[in-house]
Length: 107
Image (tube, rainbow, N blue to C red; front, side, top):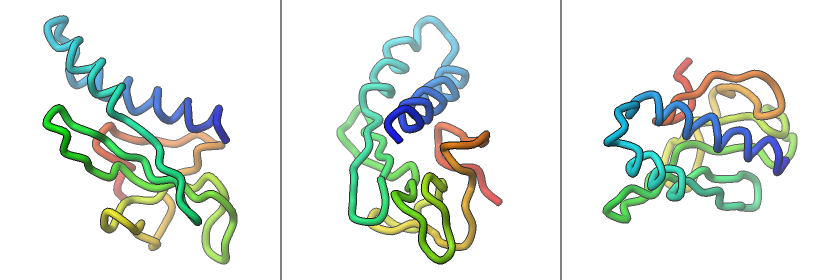
């Protein structure tokens, strides 16, 4: 799980760096990478972005274990600060997936 989460972290940062490709924006990319974190809960791992003004936003959620609808590693879009949208997985961190720095891809 740790390796897959590290790969996800890198993929999010790489997508952000594409958006801010100007050399003058490198400080912003480093700050973004340092502000991206994982918070482990009972059912999910919450991916949190901390912005320069210490404002926090939920990037998405990762399933910790299988349940009736989702598999371990499924990427879920955030519905709120505390809960994911449980309509459909946006990918799985153990498989190929498409994401953006702003959050999991929409359906």
